[in-house]
Length: 217
View (cartoon, rainbow, N blue to C red):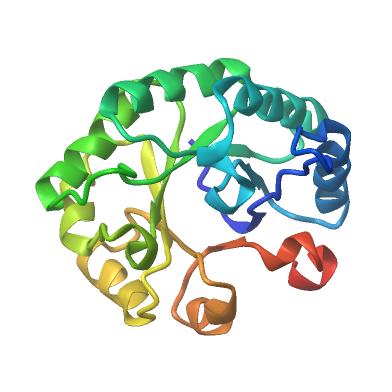
C-alpha cells in the first residue's frame, strides 16, 4: 500500500445560493487543485459540510470527485458519523462511490475514552478495504488520539496516517518517539505547517490550499 505524502487540500463543497450542491463548481475547484500540483484531495471534510449533508448529497460529491480526479491523485473522503453502525455502513458505501481512502473522525456524539476510541477506528478499518487517515482534533471534538491510542492501532494495517490537529506541536515528536515510522503524520493546522515540516511530518491536510494551491504546494 502506497503511503500518502504531500499536500492534500480539504476541498470545500460548493453550494448554490439556495443551499443546493453545485457539483460543477466543486469539480472545477478539484481540477484547479490538481493542475496546481496537489498530491491528493480530501472531499467532505468537516468544513466541507460533511455532517450537514444528506447521504444522497454525500454520494453525489464523492462520485463527482471521482469522475474529475480520474485516478491522478488519491481521493480521500471524510467520514463523520455518530454510531459505529452508521460509520461502518458509510465506509462501505464511500468505497463503492469511488473513494480511495477515508479521513475518519471520532464519534461526533460521544466523548470516548482511549479504549473506546481505538475500538471505533478498528471497527471502521474492518468494514472496507480503504486505507484510513485518522482525524485527530481534540480541540473541536474532545477526543484525543494520543500515542497510547495509536499504539493500540499499530497492528491494523489499514490505518496508515494521523492528521495531527491537537495544537501541540510536540505531539509530532511524541508520535515518532513512541511508534517510529509506523504511521505517517500529517499537519492539520495551517499555521503550524513550518514547525510540523521541521519535525518530520510527511503531509499537510490544508484549508488554505483551496485559495492558494500553487503557493501552498
